[in-house]
Length: 627
Image (cartoon, rainbow, N blue to C red; front, side, top):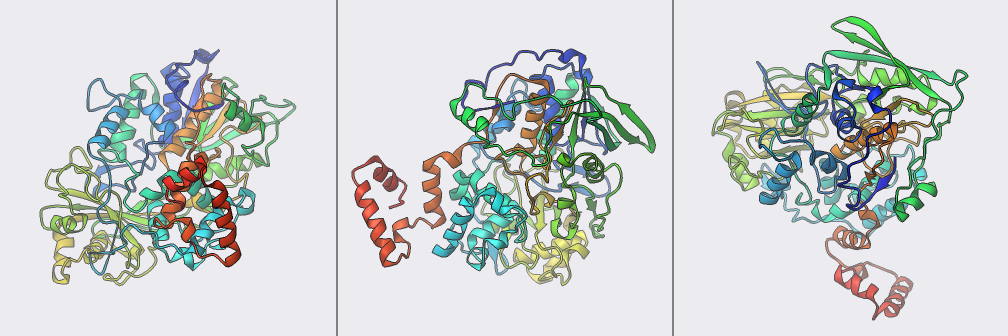
């Protein structure tokens, strides 16, 4: 497996891998990573579809990308996904997945046309004082000291960030800024989360710094992500004869480690392809490996499953490939209702992704450390709720804030609206309506989440964790400026709200070190790979659709030896234009020469600029308003 860039390999069809017709694949889970691995097995691995078996513990596919109309409960979306135009793997795959709405076009085609004709941007990023625009004016509000703290983190080596929280590097200069409000609510970062992941995010999305305040950098699907992304992939796989086994819990994967078998396959950590830059990265140690890695042969020999209470095993040979979705951000999610709160149930049980990973990790040090992510659910939880408005009583209050007709079928809020003075740090959003294909035309589905669910609300004087759907709706209506004498009636009779508690939703953001997540294909692995948000792949960032799908592509390409490049993570961090632009945007457009410098620093800057005058470097600095 190797990385590539550009379009030389982007449209090439790889040759059929040797021996693929004699292999079978077992995929654990049906989230984006698992479904992507199945799609790549079919499309590029050219494996017969009936040789692919997908094991899913739930009765429906999709993992965290859900969206359901549950009888007796209502519409539920646990979360949403923000995407950009440089999700290279995602678009590589979706160009091949047929649309389930329009004959003869791909999911990428319809997504591209939609976002070209109806581009995303927000007209109100934050409110305060009961629905009034917070007046942030797209500014980050960073002092020179705060900007330097961010820059220092950007240049700090990864090794110096292991197991450290964000607060080791940012103080109130950053944490009280508009920048941190934008950032934490958009990506769901908490102050105690990983400084390493914060740095990786800044590097990964350096090209989007300027688009953070108004979300102009983002793109969204037409419907909820289950209907827009998961269903087309499932239909594609079913059309190729792929087997789905639902209500099938995988309790363990048993491995034979060593046992006199010597070393496992010797694969290049990343092959060199035909690209000089990628060759340098592949041979320079740029891609750090798991410190617990060994070349010892590691063979998956058995999958232990439980289906409808019946336990059984699937025996494996070297010709049986296993793709393991370890961990899971929506594990142990619970739903409340209009009249009941969502329960708190963090206890891990057999058949879930966390318990399975713990059993797997006990078998070899290179299989990661799940306890780093799942041992403190109070630090990884937050709550969301889906509010369905039932008539035309509530929509006018929405329209007053988002300044768009929510029934237009086009962009509404353009991303989340954060309530700056909410005790829960509440954010809410309306994507294009209807969010469900069968949703009545006079109803709206609103997604609400609270980053601080343990704090008492401003209107409902109790924690979000203890609130019914109706009470969460009341808190939301209050912050939209609905008169208090109308709030109770509107929440009770004119909306249906379903709360969801997710104890491990930000588990992947917990401080970590090298080796805490297993490599997608560990050294010495014969016939297995790890998938999803808790597998390790270089440079990309978790909590994205792209990360999940990238692990699926890398797993298939590595185990089958598919001779085609995996698109590298978009190289914006290596583009000087992006670096210059981000530097100025973070300072709200002020040139670097306006920074408060002492006499000696000013003299040095003046001398450097004089030497650069008349060069292309000076022209570039002026073009991006750095000077």
